[in-house]
Image: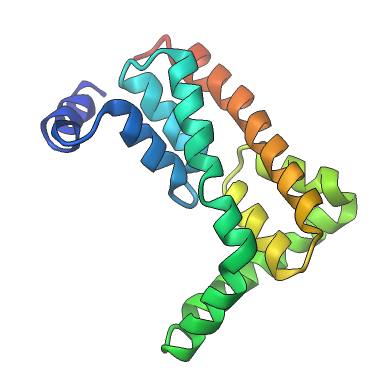
Length: 164
């Protein structure tokens, strides 16, 4: 762990603050808030600052996904990237029954419980591709992000935090 922190400080850390690195990591699909909070803990960022930057970083791309992903997918398909689009649509379709079963609560739990393949990006993708109500989907995703923050804060700053 110390070698990672040393690498970070000697490369990326010279150009941006640790908080902004956490913000950026929290925006990355699949890594999202889970990775951001682990990074915040490893970099010694105080818990409340880490939570703030992770939550904001995780929320930032969601409106763009909800509003524009269909247009982006259409553009990608026209520019010979249909394979990527098909994989993402397949992933959304695979997760749709989990969310449909419980509606708004299903989306909240899908986003909030930190398991592989779940999170705000995939939740927003499913909500957008399957035309869920924008307000309900946004609220579910936001509450899911807060739930994930609670769970990952306990893991990052509690259980694993004592190891760093």
